[in-house]
Length: 89
Image (cartoon, rainbow, N blue to C red; front, side, top):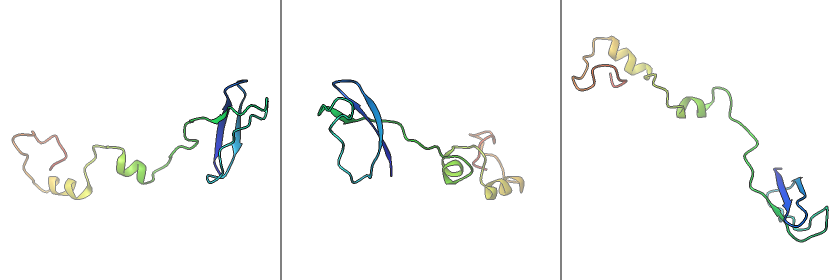
């Protein structure tokens, strides 16, 4: 279950509540009883770490794929337009 942050517009009270995603938003402030208690927009509470697909597929690294590196070392010629310093060989 996600944790949602709420804030009261009247008294300024802030609190986090553990709720189901399907649960209706809370509207009554637990501090002052006002009906101006609303859900806040917050950052995600997790980070992607390690060597999973998000690190290997979307990091934008300049390391060429193994098949391309093998063909370049096997005597491939560099295109005159790129100078041979790119990953297209």
